[in-house]
Length: 269
Image (cartoon, rainbow, N blue to C red; front, side, top):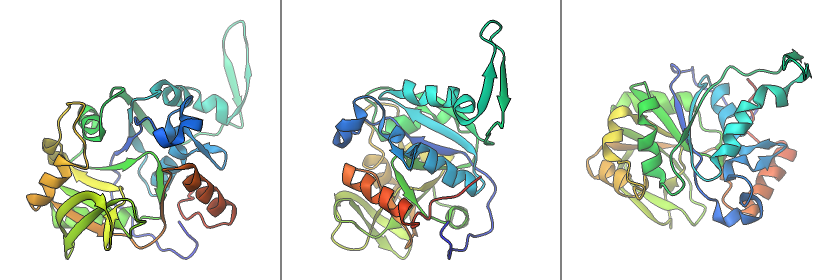
């Protein structure tokens, strides 16, 4: 977290689902050879930054929804121990002796959710791996200083099926119409005022009833729109740091923020 930010007392750990399957068409200079979540920021994939952020707040079980070039993400975690450590390998026997091994206490489930599946379909396809009443969901291309413990406490307190983190608009994202914290409508039209969908969702298992496994199921359309219409969607307002990596310009901003010491998502586990 940022130096001057206080973190709420940790809520019990829950699984974190991360959407990693999109094609990242605005990043073709990078995504022709790697999926967007594997684009590096300060020498590590942005996916690692997102996971490390959650792990730093006590949530270390991850379910990754893979699609486009998903094998690159699988290989990253299969090789994680070797790439993070010094080692000696006996090429005859295949035995490996790690030196100064760098390890993280993460459990990572990689699920191939299809090349062409949309966000709702990807979530539905990993449902068998979600063994919890509450879980979190986020996108594999954005970082924030969201107080995850406060988000979960708020989510559990109101008892609705879904909580979306609302952030102030950057001009090109969908707008949330709210009454207090109640989301009265969820729209993908550009924001003119108010809050936008910043990701960093907290969800109950019953929210999965709003989505289906058909590849054309878009989370941000019918599922969230229906949840809002049913009074089952609440908004957690976040006024701190939030930045997506939608374009190369966004990546440069993130790199500059990191280099300038203004990277409040930076946590170490």
